[in-house]
Amino acid sequence: MSTHATPEPDAAEELSFAFEGDNRWEAVQGITLKTMGRRLPHLIKRSLAVAWKVDRRSVIALMACQTVSGVAAALGLFATTSTITALIGDGDITARLWQAWPSVAVLAAAAGIRATLAITVTWLSSRIAPLMQQECELMLLDAATGSELAAYNSPGFRDKWDNAERGAVVAKDIIEEGQELLAALASLTAGALVLGVIHPLLIPFLVLAAIPQGIAQINSARISYAAAIKMTGNGRMLGILRWHLSHRGSADQIRAGTMAPFLLGRYKRITTRITAVHQQAITDGARMSFLGALGGGLASALVWTVLITLLATGHLAIAAFGTAILALRTVTGSVTAVVRTSTLVFRTGLYMDDWTTFMDETGGYRLTGGTHIPEAPREVRTDNLVYRYEGTDTDALDGVTFTARRGEIVALVGENGSGKSTLSRLITRLHLPTSGAVTWDGHDTRTLDPHAAWKQVSLVPQDYAAWPLTARENVTLGQPHDDDTDLWAACKATGADEVVHELRSGFNTLLANEWLGGKELSGGQWQRFALARAFYRRAGLLVLDEPTANLDPRAEHRIFTGLRDVAQDRVVVLVTHRLTNVAVADRIVVLDHGRIVQEGSFAELSGQPGLFRELLDLQNDRTVPAPRVEQKEITA
Image (cartoon, rainbow, N blue to C red; front, side, top):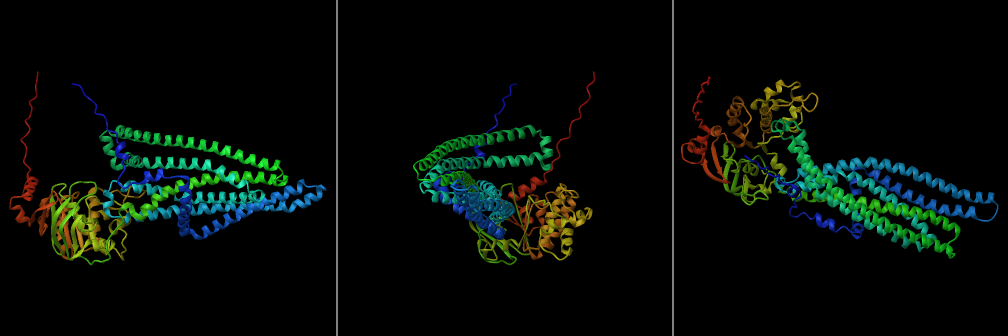
């Protein structure tokens, strides 16, 4: 029998997918020397604003150092003219030396001041840079947590986040690059001022000499940035693969499934793709730099020709010519430095643009809402509720209308994909309706202050977080508390107290064995803690989404027998596939493909034909298969 290997699909298209509204490619193509000149002051100003926020005294000191350094450079060049004039003049050499020493003293002082200031600038820049990165990262994380939950279902949100995160990381670079730019500008200004005094004709030729390098460097920046954004999705996939290949949660499946060669092969193909794109960008950038250097060299030769012509025609004195040579060397180096650092600042600024855009728009999903501060809801109602996830062409919920009141337990049941979890997110205001409405005591959730609303919510999701925090923090979730009385009560209600008693340091034990002294819990133990969080919170709306999926029968029984007491002063919504557990509910809402198809008590629904009865019968069907026929041993 012949076998045919199925070729593995190339994921490059999916990883590089351009989502709607992504205008970065157009922005890259629009990068020109004129664009850079127009936007560069804005980029520096924005960076200085962040630096001013984190350490304004250091910013003031930096600006003062750069100003004094530029003045010292100009004084040094002017002193050079006086020194050369004195040394090459007529008369006794001793008299000429005495005439030159004040200028020499100025030169020495200027050099010493500039050296001291350079050390100070380096120290101040190194002091501000990590503070800027920290501030930008904190602002970015704050923006991410301030986005609507729907953002995480958007195909473009993660790309926007990745690029914004890169902008936060390079924020520390822009302050150092900005200081280099200011230093180069100060030196350039000083040299240009001296050359302008010597002969104004030299200035336009210096500008001409800078243009070829400027064009080349800008094109290199565009190529580098384009390569980076092109590989955003590929880079993120590498991060995910690295996590799975090294994390203990995937280790058993990688080994038992013999997945290592497959995953390593996928990793290698993606890294090869990224390397190829970046190598091409490096090659193209080097070509641009070569052309820029060639053009700059020809322009510099023209400047030197003009300078020598001025000397030969008597328009420039010998002493001024010597000073002009020094000034020209200073200016030439400064022009190169200005072009190079301007490009670095501009390229870093492109990444910070991604950061700024994300901060302004939160990836297009800035948290919205009203100003109404809700009390603990007495009634939660949905009215003709419709919800559709972004990128899909069908509604996850379609025309759902139901009511849950304080003191009762409402169960949501149905097959996978019926919309149960989606509905639970909508009634907790984690999602906003596509159409229709969700109301708390008559107030549309769109009009609620989101953070105030969530203070009234206790949620146990299907995928609960196992925080690398202490046992106490894993229950309180950082909420302030006076003592552990309520903490113990919540843990006893869920069985988490049994786990705490077994921990080495009780509530002070770190629940993460990646650190010394930490403890890793089982899935069932973690679920007890997830339930304890919800019970401890004492919010008015309690939503339990598959709350006992990992619990043993004894722990599960404890939860459901105590749920009636919990519901006395709360609205309780229970989402589960275990239909025998919903007997505790006052009402059961049966969902099918986003619509409510049945509603009633356990006794009513289990006693009549319909989806609920069908699913209940299937769960209870434990037909014993026919016994295995024993095979008689065959003897020769």
